[in-house]
Each structure stands twice: as C-alpha cells, then as structure tokens.
Length: 155
Figure 1 (cartoon, rainbow, N blue to C red):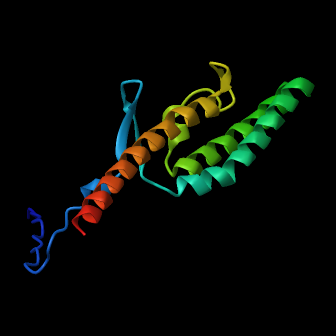
Figure 2 (figure 1 turned 30 degrees about the horizontal axis):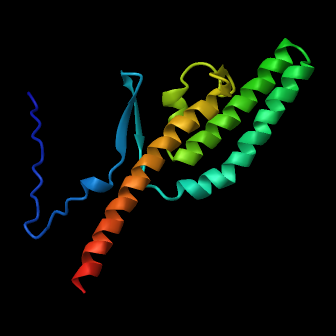
C-alpha cells in the first residue's frame, strides 16, 4: 500500500489588507565584497545613541585591561584565557551597540583588540559602521526638514 501526502492548502482570508512597510526593514551591507558576510543593520535606529553611551565606557575599560595585561603577562595559558574573555566581552558589547551580529560578520577571525591602522579592531569597525548611521540619519533629517518646510509654507 503506497501512501501519498498532499500539502494542505491554506486559504487566504479575503478580508486582509496588506500594508507595504519595506522602508523600515534593515539595510544589507556586504563586507569586503564577500557574499557570505552580509551585515543587516537598521541605520535609522536612534536607540544606538543610548546603547553607545552605555557601552563605550565598558569598551574603554576592557581596552585598558588588555593594555595592562599585555604589559604584565603572567604566562601563555593565563594570557590565552584572559585575552579570550576580553575578546568575548568586546564582541558582546559591539553586537549590543548595533543590535546585530557585527562581531561575527566583521571580525570572524582575530580578536576585537587586534591593532589595525593605529586602532583596535573594535574601534575600526565602530568607526566604519557608525558612519553609516550618521550618513543615513543626516539624510533622513534633511528629508524631514524639507517635508516640514513644505507644509509650513502652505499655511
């Protein structure tokens, strides 16, 4: 006896009205042309300011620990464990700030405190990504100002 399966067909209710909201979805950014490294960000997220204000002092404190630890070095095993903990903490904070998996996409190898162009890796990443927010928010505020001015002239 052979069994056949039939997919249940779901009827779509006729009383649903679709609303187009694609403008509020996250924007996709490809890192270094690598299709396996797509970062999705809401570059209109004003909450980034409070998350950044809350987290940046913590990142600075971890950075200070890394520098202090590098000077005092206790031993290879201790170094590896401590440095891994510092890296994990930095990754968690960076992901929290941007509300996205930034550390996974932008720092899949190495550590967040690797020196890159005179900065730690996390600083380099933050500079690049916060610029996206700044550019987008400036453009959006210009649009808002133009819209408000348009309506203000009509009165």
